[in-house]
Image 1: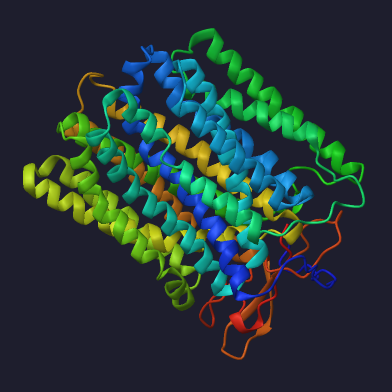
Image 2: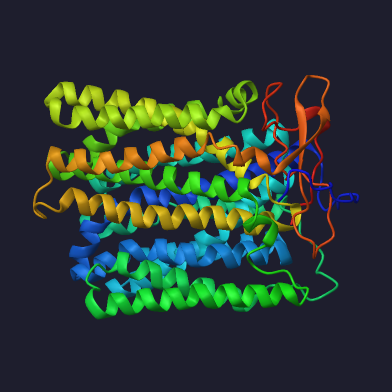
Length: 534
């Protein structure tokens, strides 16, 4: 994407939904409800695993697949979900995702055996992938300017709230409900929220008329990407794969990458719209935003994973005590999310660099205190560091998503959101495996402070690398200034997203408001233009 490209011809945006504040609040409630329900599931599932394994007489491999299959099928559902949502409408895919997620939750909670539970968990992950692709796309479609950052902040706050409610609810259920039933109740905790979100979706997300022509889905590319995601994730899910089988998987993955590239070139040459939309894949801003998200998400999730393992196994804390120690950070994350749009309005794109620098400093401090403090001083320092990390994360995440997804045209909101989510999902899978592997290398039966230190050090390097990337001028190279608004903020528009599709005026483009002189501003709220809801 060139900084000197001519802006696309504008057409009047399509109006497919109500404009009232109540309608927008309902849409946001759907997105927040879906985010809360799916992340609540992630927050409680590990609490159910010990009893599940005992009650179902599950082998170790069965428990490993139960824990891992969700992430695998989540990733598989993202890209098809984004593409289909762009082509067929958000409502249908959103409802399908909610139904699959609910069916999977119910199936895993009532499973008579471990492999039934694994199959239900796979179905649940597929539904979560479809849901997540639509949520970010709906926010992109509907909200602009600071309102978009606020909507993304609400979605972030929902995840933080799930991190508070989930462990406490699971611990309460395990303490009150009889053991044979407790794990089933824990796995079903998200069902009421999913059903409530489904009702809101039927009310507030408008349907879109069926396209007059058959949508261009690029199904071969979807199949190739699904096969790649499946194969590249399996060695992480099943560490027992090694030797010839491992190298065979690596070879097949290489073939899939080449085959996908060849197919996409030929598909575009025929005048079709490839899954890997050229305007997104060649946008340095979009690619850079995904790289930053990859390093940040993988590093921060891996850090929380190894810290939890250390508290449970290294220090021998109970799950309830671990939850109590980590809840202050989660509560601060909820509160700080509401301030993210204000911070962005003052700092603009510098928000990313400052927040990442704070998180890198926090991880560096954790590296030091891991081995220098013990008992109460360590706990106090850890809680303080987690509060700092949570605050910076809450400010960083909505701005990062708004900036990165802002490079997508309205026709590709779903695909862009899916790729960003897939980037984070794959990063989380590999970073958690890498960091926990480093932590446990010395002795698989024990977890030491030295192991925690080594694991957190890797997380620090990842977040520091993301911080360095956030200063890159590549984020600014793909935009073009079109003058200044009355309040001094510039208005930026993206170059055309795809030569194959007619362009609409849209809230996408990196059009996000900030202070005067910042190279990455947002469109002022008073000049918002609403895209269509798909």
